Amino acid sequence: MSRRTLAVVMIVTALVALFAIARYPTEPSWQADDPRRGAHLTAMAWWQEHLTLAHQDGTVWQRRQGDWEELPSLPEEARSTVLLGGDGPLLAGTTRGILTLDDDGWTALTGEQAPEGRISHLAQADDTLVAADNRGVWRRSPDGDWSELGRPDAEATVYRVMVTPQDNGDVLVRSGSIEAGVHLLWPGADDWVADNDGLPADIKVLSFHTLPDGTLLAGTDEGLFRQQEPMSEWQQVGGLLGDRRVLTLAHDADRLYAGSDDGVWRAPLADDSLEPEPDWLPMPAREGQLDAPVAWVLTDDATPWIVAGSAYNLRSSRTPEWYILVIGAPVLLVGGGLLLYGARHRS
Image (cartoon, rainbow, N blue to C red):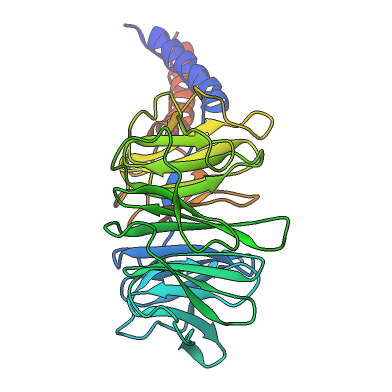
């Protein structure tokens, strides 16, 4: 190949590369952003409009204006299992009951009949707090009084709870249990009732979520199920998500996010609702894999965040191929130009 031909090939290749740079897709991917990566992240919540993390080593962090700030650590004997934020006090469900953060640090949320065991989940609505521990479900009224709601199933462990305000000012409490499905406690009732029509027997309920149109979703160890109203039949959500474990659910204006053992799957929302057979797509991680299964997903107006051993957020990223194009195109263009200039000068 002559110098002139080689120069033309280099210049044409550089122009193609420059065109590819302009057209190169930069799909967002999960990228680690955790002040204590490696310490194992156990809980995450929005608190006073800031992302807040709790790690297994007891450290608690909050993200403000792009930087992580350390908050008071949890007591050594209490390790976090769940955080409950919002605009009020920050609550931490731990291995030793419920703690709240105030000016003096973490203090126990005490009271007669207050839960003291390992807290598996917390939920709140209209100043009514509901907690699940290894003994059952507990309720804290707006005036601070605790009451025991009992065990929805005598043999099952409650893993998730959900609180739904009712028109009469009271709340409907749901429980999701391991191998006992869903149970309801109606306002004013003393006994739980099973709400498992359409669910497989001995199913493990791992997450709850409500869509903007009011549809209730239950993530289980056998896939995702939907229900239009309490005590109606559950229907499995189809598509590529299949029967994967659904550990956590969240949505933004356009999408539903489902966290599983193999990462995060997303499906479009149309008119605030989910299709029976949605178009699920997997969402890749920048490093190829996450540190652990996805235990929590949180969304806001800007970007989703997940807990998968560490904290990750969804950001657009440039792949190694893109950097190769960016570096290689100018080199080829300059090198080809010099070769072409030399070939013409020699002739």
